[in-house]
Image (cartoon, rainbow, N blue to C red; front, top):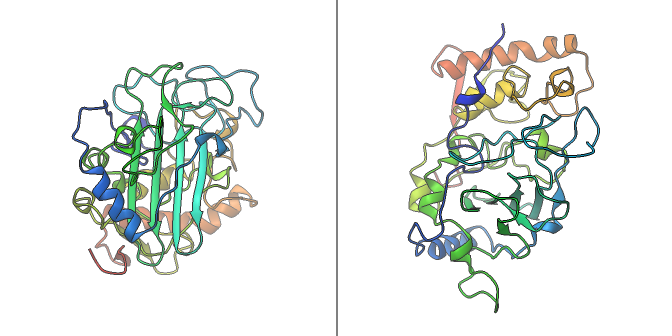
Length: 332
């Protein structure tokens, strides 16, 4: 049994919050109360320099190319689609940075400074900055995003040299204020990123996975229970079957994971930005990570589990399907 999904229809309102924002277009007064509640219930977020993050490699057929050009293909393209109407250079753009700001068993905070235009090495300009803050003990999760205004340009963008803490009321002299950098919560929440992050706060992808800079809490508590705008997101549900080989390691969320990510991870849905290297097994299959088995062994080990999950994704009430609400320590 084989599946396909048109890449153009995927992930609207997707994984790292893909909405357009013009500074000043939305009231900013909601940011600080939301950020302060996040800091109180999860943990404070430090200021950071995007340039100190781990550079996200962009390779072509296993090698670093001599030059990067718009709309090129690569081994591990970004799975985040561009924002609607954005004039991006595609999904294989160098100089994005991944940072883990805290991961100590109690609090996990990660940031992604994303490039959508081809820029020189070690640039301090970025087109998007995304941040996830997660309390491992309670499951509470907060979301922050900043976007460069359209039209995007290689010589303009967000200054990543000092990203302000979202809860910072008064910045140091000469530094940008949080309210002028981060989107207000209502704008961030309007993208419904929880529909994409429907299994846990941190989604694995080959692009980010190669950096090693991604917190993990695949079976832990998870709730979007801070901020009225985020509480309106659909509540995530995990789907499984008894003895399923996939859900022994991580959950399968009933939204984006069911409809898209599961098929991407086994080479059934293909991005138009994948090169020939990425289309051949085992590179085409990134679940489970670090494959060392033959394709025949993979099929024997995982195919039945995938088919069972696909059946449950279509009908969670089908015989043998187990649907479990994903919640925090206190149910939202």
